Image (tube, rainbow, N blue to C red):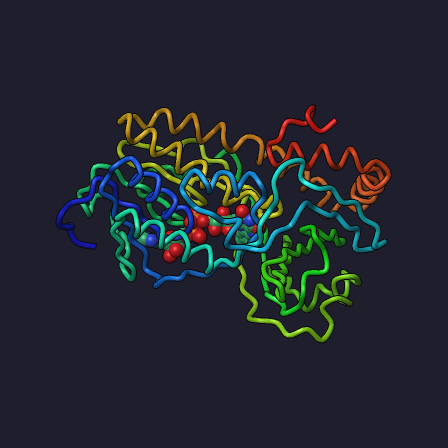
Length: 348
Ligand SMILES: Cc1cc2nc3c(=O)[nH]c(=O)nc-3n(C[C@H](O)[C@H](O)[C@H](O)COP(=O)(O)OP(=O)(O)OC[C@H]3O[C@@H](n4cnc5c(N)ncnc54)[C@H](O)[C@@H]3O)c2cc1C
């Protein structure tokens, strides 16, 4: 893209949730912000579309009312696909919300527009200094070009799984978001509307697909039999921890800045929180504080992802863990409280 007039204070590469969150937070601090994205809005992407209560709270700090835009769920249910046995718990405080990705994108774009964020849809940032902006934010997703240009690709960890999403036209059958644990993959189900659920298969195998996997998930297969569904959309879900997320006047945010496995349902929460921390750092004129905040924000979700993924592909461990949790639902409730950042002791 060419030099922009007037030159923005903040150029955001990427108009997905991270780019829009960053733009909203920076604009709320008074910066002139330009968002650039090659796709036309609303932008869709394979996503589980589940927002935990901590995500809903984090979004509120950006002036976004997600609870009003989505379909509520009150907790999480784990199910063993093999035995059909499960355990559930409610969130100690607040509710989760299932929000269709394009609804979320519309909501965020409207909020950004109302604040006066400038947007260039259908354009691409092609070099980090092209626009001459004071600050450049790389919110251009997991394959971030800004990250590469800024020399920030080095990571402590980088593993991948693959997610496949479909919407089914059926009334949600549970007040909980469900994670069904199969032999070498998981299916999770998020209620997103009165007559719609979002179903995601996550596997290490890039060739896995929902139709082929469903027979391994008898409960889900039975509930979805004969139900009308939409297009299947796939995406990589990476577990990536970068060594640094800032350099010079460049800061990374959202999946560009590293990510936790999709099974946590925390990707959006992370980027909402990062956006607020980054805007504070821009205001102070010092990206060092963002570097530290980014590390702190990612710690709990990364820990929870590791804990959950211990059950991926390990049948004995998974069966044992699920039986223990089913026998001790209060333990599951405590883990859920920890997952959404609510003090465990208050839940005793
Ligand atoms: C299968 C799956 C299920 C998930 N489920 C959940 C869930 O239930 N709950 C949850 O909270 N999170 C979930 N996540 C995680 C969540 O979807 C991501 O964390 C989130 O999409 C990251 O947003 P982002 O804006 O960083 O990246 P993206 O959404 O990938 O957006 C990046 C944007 O950058 C643009 N771009 C690329 N290159 C350029 C360029 N050179 N110049 C300008 N723009 C560019 C792209 O067009 C794109 O619009 C899931 C992820 C997957 C894969």
